[in-house]
Length: 222
Image 1 (cartoon, rainbow, N blue to C red):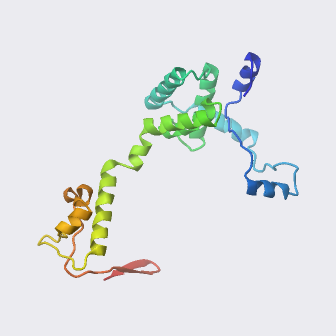
Image 2 (image 1 turned 90 degrees about the vertical axis):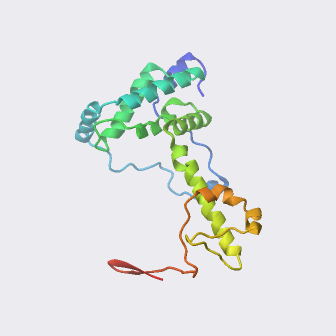
Image 3 (image 1 turned 135 degrees about the horizontal axis):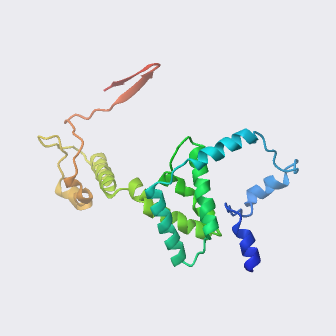
């Protein structure tokens, strides 16, 4: 990290910060085996007309109220943690987000464009991870990926599968639900609340589905 006011001002002008750590032990061996050390060869660079078209399209991208509100929240969050992001950098960040949207053919920003923020606002890996966590919680990503109800349903089916696997003789009621004996209930207490979850229906006779695939169609037989 730069030290001193002049060095920090210079560092602030680099918009995207991607910390690069040392290679692993296996990677080091591969590094030593490289024959061509002349550097990367860039192909397919944009020509001037393509760059101008992107600049024009990015200038027409609209910042939605939702995105603007999240940027304001993040700015306040960073200030609370004494992380300084200059106004100049915020303007560059928004322009980068607009460019990302424009290159995807969109005319307005989406909240998912904000995933670029950790690499534009934080100085190091730890700071980037903190901002990534803030975004995940603020956008509800973790809650969406693992909702409590889905977790309960999965636990219920797992518990029922365990019971059926270990049972000597399966006993179903008139509605096609597996009966829980006292012994099973003691080992799996109500399947972690599974009694309140809709169960798959069964008949007395076990059936195993076998799927066969034919080009252009699919057929399932029991």
